[in-house]
Amino acid sequence: MSSRLQVLYQKKPSYDIVYSNGFDDLCLEFDALSIKERKICIVTDHCVKEHYEQELYKIFKDNCIQCITFSFPEGEQSKTLDTVKELYEFLINANFTRSDLLVALGGGVVGDLTGFAAATYLRGIDFIQIPTTLLSQVDSSIGGKTGVDFDQYKNMVGAFNMPKLVYMNLSTLLTLSDRQFFSGMAEVLKSALIRDTIFYEWLITNFYEIAERDLSILEEMVFRTDQIKKMIVEKDPTEQGDRALLNLGHTIGHAIEKYKNFELMHGECVALGCVAAAYISMKKKLLSSDEYYEIRDMFVPFNLPISIENIEPAEILRLTKSDKKMSHKGIKFILLKKAGKAVIDSTVTDEEILEAINEIHYTQEDIKE
Ligand code: GLY
Image 1 (tube, rainbow, N blue to C red):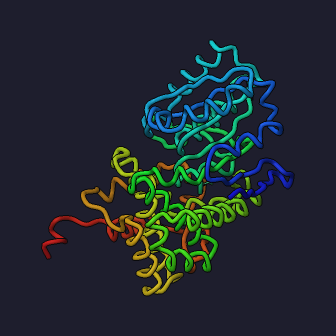
Image 2: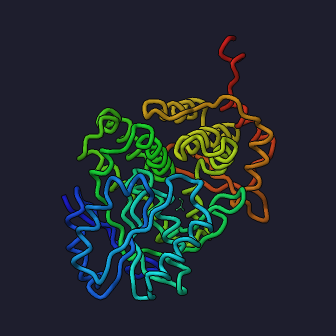
Image 3: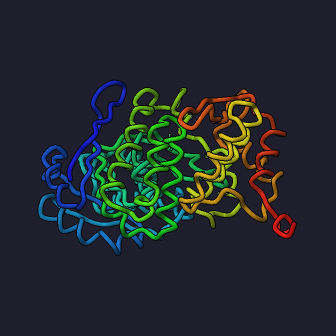
């Protein structure tokens, strides 16, 4: 299988997303990337390095001037300016110039960090994305959002920086842990909820094959999710308007992620955030209660949480308000009019947010009752 999507930036062709079941088709992209005249630095984390770096290194090494690898410990804790500084030092020591190339090999942390380093090293050096997690294949590798966390703020420092290519090897999805895989499913469900009722129904119908990781079903699922993202980011690349829809579930989700000190996976927090957003939508009479419960329960077969124990709702509210998705007018909340139609709403009150956080919060007493 080899197919592709072309993503436009400011209405002009910008980069292709290539879909394959291995890494070998990457060679077909070498001429367009002029890699013969370039040094390449593969940027990855220690865990992904063990799985794929050797294979990638072999593919690149005889086709470019020099291929080197920079890796760092996996996890959100590495998504900092300190890691970017180490990468700059590594590139300077290897005499990387503006005409060389960075290759982001891994999940969202690797892609965001590498894209940001590429935007800033020597005022800009090319990079490509090779996402290896479901979450990065359906969300973070597409659309040019790059950056790192800063102090307690997630993705606070960054740049919009388009890759030269996104290369998806879908068979990498088969090696993910269940928890990692289902975490990525939260972003798939989110995209369907935002824009595509038919796809949402397709996900429900095909839930068994998805959970079993049937590769041909996964290919269709990733491709359809990426089509939704492509459509949204092409219209609004720098999030002046509708791109904010992609933040469905992320406002409260990021606050929970932070509150739990990144012990929960990003997608698990997004699922909780989506349930809270659907609850607010019901309270604002955009959704009926039947629609709310249907949306909430859809996360369950995908092993995603719809409630959480031991949180302090008032603290989650505080963290929600410190998220960068605040506008001058207040929090830009993403609500649902139905499964497949999201809207931006700036009228959500603190009381409504708190009620939604209480809805997804349970205690041991609730279980005994
Ligand atoms: N992950 C949301 C966006 O790319 O806009």
